[in-house]
Image (cartoon, rainbow over all chains, first blue to last red; front, side, top):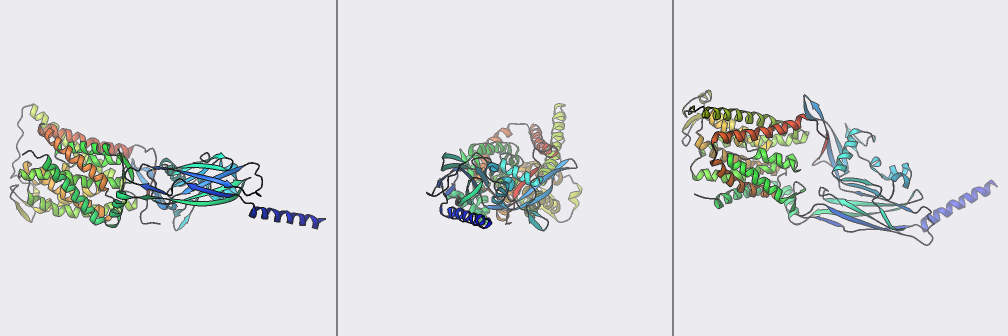
Length: 260
Length: 308
């Protein structure tokens, strides 16, 4: 009897794993653009993420439908975060922490509250939600993430959110049809140039079924690019050129407005 | 019309920036100063980071002081020899200032030092100007004659060694105070993003006894060279000069300066000094308020360059 039960369990396990492998849903994701161009009239951009869930004929019936979570993450950067305190009457930066290799831009979207999509353990592993994002700080010789309640961590997130560089929304992903969804990604003018990764995760019945990644790039073009390259690569020449421009502007003005 | 600034990394309205250049230019033409002490805070106010503001304003001041210096050159109202001697100190001061600027940025105290320097310098200079000009106005109303300063009068500064003759200014003085003053101006200019004309002119008049008719032209030559070299040095070391922003400011600035100069000539000089004193003092006060009032947000962050 016991052997029969264990055999049945084994069979069941085998069956589910086979169905997993063969009857998987597939995620197809597309971005409205792969290249966001910064020119002289750039004031931020909006990107649209479209996605479809392709169901194989053998895909199991999902009683509670699908859930989508997406993480859009910008180029990594290190930031010095400073805290002011009153010293002898004036407000001075007294303490600082370095956040090492954190995303310059981070958007975490889903179609309903994160904790309703899957369990806390999975959320932490997949870094869904600011509470689960790994933000490493340099503390003495170590580099590590700290507790969620850490004041520097909270301040860092608050500042990023204020500048619209970090966004977290459990309503941003909308389903147009049971297997068709979209989300719009707002990029503020301040979003740095570089490549951005888009990680889309499909959940059903509280479990991650599949995920797919995509990417887009923000780059400066034309005159903007020329100026930045000149300033970074040829700083001295760039400075001399700017100073010369200043002198000729001054000279030009004294000619135009000459009255004597 | 919005335009994206490539180095400051933010979109600004061209007309707003141009109007700022125009307004500051008007004031600078009126009082014969560079106007950096107004422009730098204004740029910070519209969202440009203090470091980019200071670096960029230097080129704006170079433009407006060059057009001014040309005007005084045609009238032969500047002392080139004296300007050259001031420059010797000025260039060293600028170099030291840009170096300290880089160091302070590294330890995260640049903003504090900029704010403190504004409070101390503008507060004291503005206050002194207000007192002096109010006294002059009262004296004039009482009908007293203002005692003319004799150009030949001596102070202890004139006893120092290495004396040089400045023909245009009819002076025979030691170059040590001249170098020191030049050095101070270059230093302040690089750190605070100010040309320092409003400090230099009184120093030259009261300490070195330079005649008033050549003092503004001479100070403009110094400002011009220190600010042009600060532009080059900031661009070469910190890569923070925004050429697009600088150009908009320059064009506005030199235009405004012409109209300002005309209005300035129609005003009595002690009234003009009182106005300038009030302006300088209130900018200093504005910075003091920021330092002493609790900020809305005690945290701030900035990008670490060259760290991965």
